[in-house]
Amino acid sequence: MQASVEYARPRLGIDPDYAAWPAGPRLQDHEILEELRRPPCHLEVLMPSLNEARRLPDTLARTVAYLEAQPYSSSIVVIDNGSVDRTVDVASSTPSGRVPVRVIGCAQRGKGAAVRRGIDTSQARYVGYMDADLATPVETLDVVMPLLEAGSQAVVGSRRIDGAVLGRRQPLLRSAGGLVFRMMAAMLLRGIADTQCGFKFFAGDLARAVARQLSIDGFAFDVELLCAIARQGIGVTEIPVEWSDQQGSTLRVLTDGRRALADLFNLLRPTSVSAR
Ligand SMILES: Nc1nc2c(ncn2[C@@H]2O[C@H](COP(=O)(O)OP(=O)(O)O)[C@@H](O)[C@H]2O)c(=O)[nH]1
Ligand SMILES: [Mg+2]
Image (cartoon, rainbow, N blue to C red):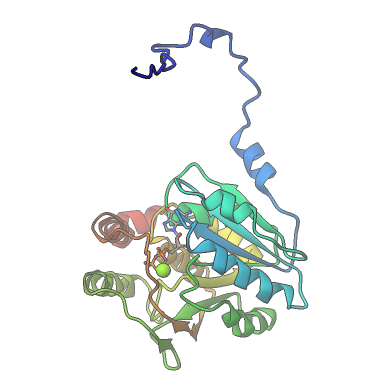
């Protein structure tokens, strides 16, 4: 005898009760930012994360362990905008004690948009961001924090100055794109050897002030941020880092890479520079 299977019949078309849905209070932009704001602390580590359910658990465990051993107060903020995996579940269930791990969202796509959202809503004395793949070890903060506390306003990791230790290199197509990107970035920013290392920390007030001037949502965001800092006449301290390419890159060379080059091209255009 054939088993009979009954499927719930999908309801097609517009829900007839739609008009009766309560409108509900809609938050204005500034109210949303207010809701996302965290309490002040000494250091806030932002972690932009796109589909990082696989790489995040280890990264968060190591970052929490490191920060819990530090004498200063700190927190970790994972910023998700568009993940379709369990990034949010993984991040929000990370065990931690003294160092909270928070997750916030951002409707605008892109790493730049995510970092900007994190900075805009931070009240920390020092704030910065690192990649979810720990390509640069979190222990690099041992060097960063004393520099910030001694008065440097922007301390950024560099793979291209003496003392940097490079492990596994990026794939060929990626390095080729990176070379073009670097040449263009060098026209905008003299004196900074590596604009793209995902390990950058700032005095909170400076980061918040410059973040308001930025608009690039994608991977070229770092260059725009460093340009804004340079325009204020503030020096950027590059520190050599250990860095190793990690599997599972979220950067799609042909789409994200092309967009990053286009964003840099726009930054280079005299009209866009003077309009800023
Ligand atoms: N929130 C968010 N994070 C992103 C996005 N794109 C990349 N990231 C994060 O940016 C960091 C650097 O990305 P990664 O894939 O390691 O890039 P790569 O090392 O340059 O190949 C990682 O933490 C990613 O999850 C995005 O669109 N939104
Ligand atoms: Mg990476």
